[in-house]
Length: 361
Ligand code: PMV
Image (cartoon, rainbow, N blue to C red):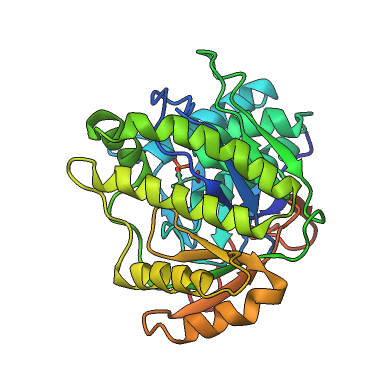
């Protein structure tokens, strides 16, 4: 391995069309109770991550959006603990002992239901794989990224991606695979309406297990979601926005219903999210063709992802302009998945310290 060589990668979120909610294993394997399927977005929403291994470091450090995150010792959040575990695992695979500096930035709100942890964990796995010269396939990388943040396994691939839940206890059959590439359905667009960019109050780590442990509705979700994955695959095969819209709205509602059914209740949606749900429903109902033109979906946050096609984009933008809670709109198409970047490092090559932006972050 080259000494003190900085490796930088860019990756993007994968927004679930049929959601993963609830873990079969919550001891670090992050195997899910149901399969899921999602859309990897383009670089309008992206994570950039630089990593460098060096003998000059006496400990591992991770900076996310300008702030150093604790990854060792007491009171470490679950995802940070898993990040450290994966880091040690990959270092062992590469027979490397050096400590690492990781610097990562998102160009979109973190922990607000826009799959920032998926994007972050996938980009980190990709960057570490290359920095350590590990010859891992995308499938192998997806198994590693899954162990930091489950949904991250889908962000390792471009286009539309399925995460097979798997049945094995060691998690080796719980991996992501590409269904179609990013060029397959170029008209497909995700219009993201930001209604609140603050960090969610209930982390997904806590949410997954609270729902599994307490929601009486949850068991019925599993077969529904599995069927949803099959039907969404068909709708994508047919490039059928009517079927896709109906399926993703029902799945998003179903996941949020089990969240509300959890004790203590989990409520990620706010009044603006609900206003968007009604408005999209009414727009679809008003179509003379009887065909739906758009579907909403919400992750673990109040921000809406409205999946539609280019020809209906303006109708959705008009709809959103009538909703006062919408603070910002981001438009994203299918993206390619993670890639390496050249000459764009977040680490200073001379000092081996994070580059500090002019705003101090
Ligand atoms: O990957 P996690 O543990 O942050 O869970 C994310 C789950 C959802 O985003 C709500 C759904 C999904 O499939 O991405």
